[in-house]
Image (tube, rainbow, N blue to C red):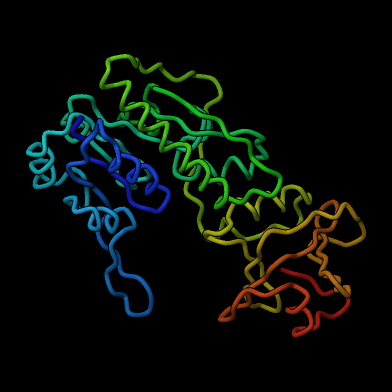
Length: 308
């Protein structure tokens, strides 16, 4: 099939690479978000998907919105049979959805109808799910509501972060997406409507959402931190300054009020609503990540001092 691939960030790269190498499907163009300013220089930078397409010599379309008349005309001229989508990040209206003969097929990193929305991996970890997965479905105008072509499952490990889990799902999901396109081309796949039961939502995670609430139980603190690692990154405040936190270790040891810090020879403990947690890496503003014990030697928390 002739396909136009839509995607933007790094988790979309395994799918694009797989389709570029496919013997059955031809990637005739890529649709991605416009180049965005980054760093102190604020120089525009191509998205990861756009950069890979450039390397492969594939045409790149960067509409500000997918409803732009010029983009819709270009899409019609390309005459795609199908448009696979992975984390594109732009709303697709009916005018665009109707262009490909076999529609748009979205790879979503959850077992739909669970965790519809922008941050399904983060939500699954935060909620304490033991199993998640990825789904391919026919894109509609609703938020991740279309009928499902196929799924794969993935266990969530005890120490998984959003980054490690998404990396695995991006790889296994790429194979699922290719199999889905194969099945559509062969006429063997019929999408199944999603169940009305088990619907949950996973909105985009903001920096404010990533602030640690020490009054939560230790398992919730642990999951909350892992769910925003590496981005946007968990944080708390110490002496009115922001401190970024890496994953923590739940000790099972009681004895500290929520947020209270205790420095030991080889670890730094913090109280929660239940047990203490031991800090891993921390990152003060303007500095590189460091071991929590090294940070504590420098700032020397007072007895009973706590994170806000």
